Length: 352
Image 1 (cartoon, rainbow, N blue to C red):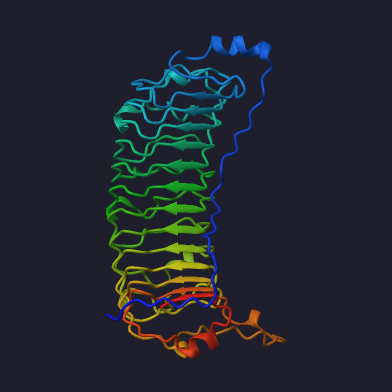
Image 2: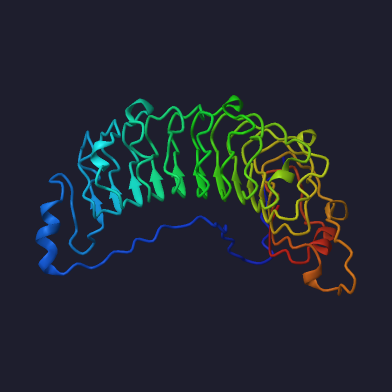
């Protein structure tokens, strides 16, 4: 393989755009005269900051149980403890909870009392990363918008788990033990507003079936996926960010149309087994093909066709939108083919 040579056409910083919603903590500043009342109901093993009366900080305390949560709390921080169970009792008065962080504990599915979480009717964000879960917990509150389950032992998704989670926009299942048999055709039924689905670093050999139609970000890095079914992207017509790095994709495993999907803006196929550049859409802006088995690039062959539009003017903006291209780690020898530059006139950064 030829040594990697970097050709930078124009230094350009590329940042991945994400539409993940970030929680905004809005607290009411409390008058000093009310500090005594806040301290009165504050669990002794936790910290209740007077200036943030809606927050309860119980992280890094060596806790084995969840303390009783005051009714005024919106934001609950319990990460990095020794908690094994989520019983219903501590949350009886916590009817205003919006945010629970239980990352880095020892919670198992058997330790979650049925109804303990579903009773939290205003909960928006639930963080259960780095625990001992073997399946996606259920039932969960209908209000939930983000569910973070990274780095558990999840290998099962019980039927109907997501059936009532129509408000969920982000589902993070990365770094678990999911196999293809974890999914049924109706597994994701009910997720009408899901935007981001992350199943990177599992043990999938096939693309997950029947994804929610509104999915915009699909992350499947570090699996063992060998192929993509024909017309797979028809059911997710809004997908814009697709990551399939570190899989086992070959030319034969791609659909006939390749990735000629007008919605895709960022396509990452690094560290696979491709020997040629797949078919792409004229709307694609970022393409990662580094560390495959590609030997040559023919710009005239891979140049996407532009749909004929009456009155279209011949300008830079009328051509393919590709701005960023990585081809390093292949068997391509420099220089950059001129026909590549002729086709992709908006290219700002190329690595070959």
